[in-house]
Image (cartoon, rainbow, N blue to C red; front, side, top):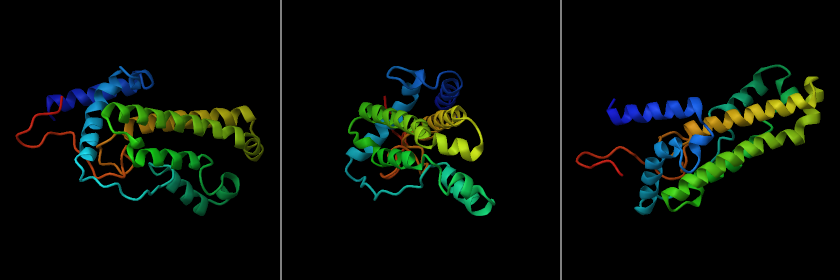
Amino acid sequence: MTARNLIAVLAVAFWAAGMPAAGQEAGGLGRLVEMPAHRALMARIAAGDARLAPFVTDGCSGGLSASWAVAAEKVPGFAELSGKTPPWEGCCVVHDHAYHDAGGATTPEQSFAERLRADKALRACVAGTAEEWRDELAARYDVSPATITAVFEAVADAMYLAVRLGGGPCTGLPWRWGFGYPGCNTAPAAGETAPE
């Protein structure tokens, strides 16, 4: 591991441990760590050889929708009690649309801002879904409506942190920011210097 990579890993660890919200704002540590990848993605798109693939979605990434579907199929009573898909899956599909084409961004700064906006919108959507489902789920699970709201808010916060940590551009992950474009790389090629 190079010193530069070690610094990046430590920066992400400090950011994740102590300041996930503040570190992602305009001047935060998260921005400092993430901007080279946004520059690489925008350069890849601007090069003209990066054609946007047709949109596809896995629902809620990271295996959430897939695991939910398996549980609905295999666990007796799960589908009747909890449904065949997560109640917030529509939020994930809207989020995937933004991630697919990097929010339509054309500059690294716009790309960073659009990703942050999409991730905040996902968190708000998932938390807001509780309003639609609160009374029905409270009755199904025999808990208070406030408990349902608290659970949805906790899920929303966890999903927000997950997409902030695992959804950056140029990661090679299938759910990365700009996943509709061919992959990009932030490491300099042999004989090149790292982007400033």
